Length: 132
Image (cartoon, rainbow, N blue to C red; front, side, top):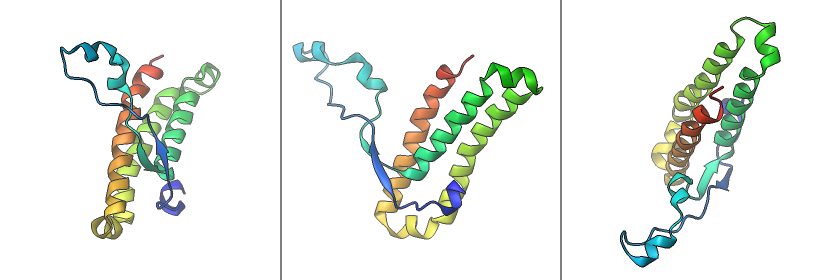
């Protein structure tokens, strides 16, 4: 329902306003934040992408719930795979459903690009967050 019926036009700002690093080796480079390399630069992403990420996190939360793991056999691995499949469905459905708009309206193409970068960035940290 999120992928097919949610309005893909709606966006919101996410990320951090990351300043450009100083020239390497200069005195100003000593003041650079070493964590800034891991921050997501501020941009607009669709509410669909944010809902997809929220659904992935909720699914992974359920997968890491120890009570559910003892109640139903193989539930955690199934939920883990389901969260991966949600991201794959986004990758497959959004370009298909909105292909005409993406090809002809630059804003649509930019939002899809931002969504993909945002989901890739967030997914790269999910493994560490849910490694248990």
